[in-house]
Amino acid sequence: MSAALQELEEQAYLTVMPRKVQDRTTARTTIACVIPAYNEEDTIAEVLTALLKQTRLPDVIHVVINNSDDETFYVAREFAGPHEHTYQDVTYRTEVFIHDIGVNKDKKVGALNYGFARVCDDFDYFLGVDGDTVLDKHAVEHLEEEILSDPRIGGISAIYTVAEPTARGFTAKFLTAGQRAQFAAFNMDNLLRGRNMAVLGGQCSILSMEALKNVMVDNRQSTPWVKDSEVEDSLLSLQIKNIGYATKISARARASVGGMDTLRSLDGQQVKWNYGAIDLMWPGQRSNTPGQPFHPNLRLRWSENISMVFNILTRISFIMLLAASLSINAYVFYPVWLIPPIVAVILNLRIGLSIRGKSARDIAFALLAVPAEIYLWLRMGHFVRAWTKFFTSNQTDNWAAQARAERGAGSAYLMPAIVFLVVGAGLIFTWLQLPIDLQSAILSIGWPVLYITTMVQTTFMLRKTFRSHRGFHA
Image (cartoon, rainbow, N blue to C red; front, top):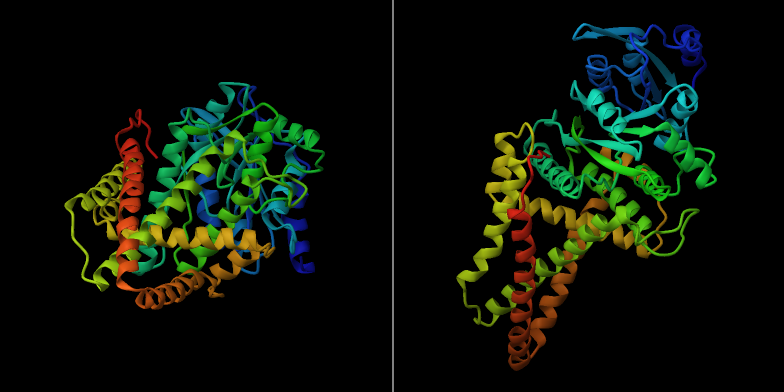
């Protein structure tokens, strides 16, 4: 941090740091909110405004700016100091502190731990909110009510949806619709599994301070968050579960998160998420924390990965078999092949309708089929890239890679398409060299295998399509 910034912080904010928030209307539990912020000049004001309008204010808010080279500090400092908000004749008071910790090699993990160190001894609960996440006005109230309802709960995640894009253009709107559908499907899967949450996402989750301290003791850590995983929130969720606490998704608390509006940035984010999940799932130890393949929080992750493998196999097999059949005039269309895409559209529509605050774009994304299929192909590319990086032991900094992608740098997101085209060209050349008898034999085996596999997949889609949502909205 520069000397000028340090002086500003000391003069404007650190002078009020020793004061503990007082004058609460009733004796109650206390909540400290920590916001790690990296280059959030466009969103931090909206995030803080939403927090300061909550029906239940956090008792203190710490904005921890790290590695930023934009105006986040100057935007956020306008909110520094005491605030109060009255709701239903109850006045809540809070105080906002702004910290710019400059260059921080641990990035978001370091920012979270910095905030934790300042609140861990004086507050009962830790509310983590990302610097681009806008909370619904009842979110903190609902999270507090739910975590107080059962002492066995170690943390509760809000229900996230992706905010409408600020960037113009078809690509941003298309990617936002895809991410909204992806988040909705993930949320609904967790809601219908007894509200057991696989990941207490950093976007907006409330965590028991007692649980965090027990995680540190049980795992011999000096801080709750560690850099053993690309997905620090997933690792912490596993650790909380390991020591006997439940990890839940809220039934009511909602938050709107910033989405990725370019192919580069989406690739950077999704590859980091996938890579981190694989690292936690895979047996063995690649860092200080061993993989936990049979952990109950990872069952949904395994299900997602297996489902993605089948999606890749069936789609590539269909394209190859179709092209091969057409090349020797052996293709015969059967209407039964329309069943899987129709079921997929119905399932996507059901997911779209489950989104609270759904838009016409969400419904069109599902009904038109093609946008959802294209987005699935993008996700398949992210999936392949993540597994390839994992098996090649390519220990790159995926946080830095995502940051570069969000700045518009890098072309790694094109690699799956390039590999697909190269492999496809090789397969076409090989196919054309085969005798007609062998080509016919391959087709006679390939189509039935694909048919059976697709029907099994369709059965699982039907099961998801017709399950009861039990009043939940994603």
